[in-house]
Length: 238
Image (cartoon, rainbow, N blue to C red; front, side, top):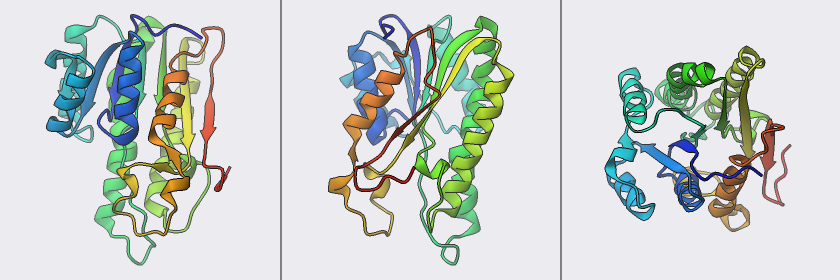
């Protein structure tokens, strides 16, 4: 495994249940961390936990192109290159078609697909210029297999997977690596507002999901983990 010490890492969606645990693991491993999220208070608290100065954080709505441009500028104000980009952001709207609104469908696409597009549109040229780096996304198992009530979520995640696979083809003659982590049910606030009967005590713990990301950040230079699947024992969908 490659050491994370001194690696410049951009962590997106840093204040979520998985993101916050990931941030702490990366910080404790000696990575040079830059955190971004939408909630300023949560971001400040997490930065304090990770012993990061304010200049290593940015509040941003990644569905807005001007805020992505500003994030890019802030990142390169403090770092001269990027080694690893981890996108742990996203929303989950799980509703059957007769209860799903157009606004909810569009919001799912904006957050889970358009946001990652804007981020990569902004940062991929930097990876291309240096011809190396690691880009990690978390499509979830619903980016591979369907579920009743997941039309909006799966549409956004299937789209994300397709976009990333296409981008991978564009850079395959470089040392830029794309890794997708397909997570099953993880016990986070994701489920707080979802009207489904689920057994959260049997889900993957957020700390364990974060350890998977931490592990993927250290994959060997001689190879690439294209995909990893991590699911609860009681619900192995793929």
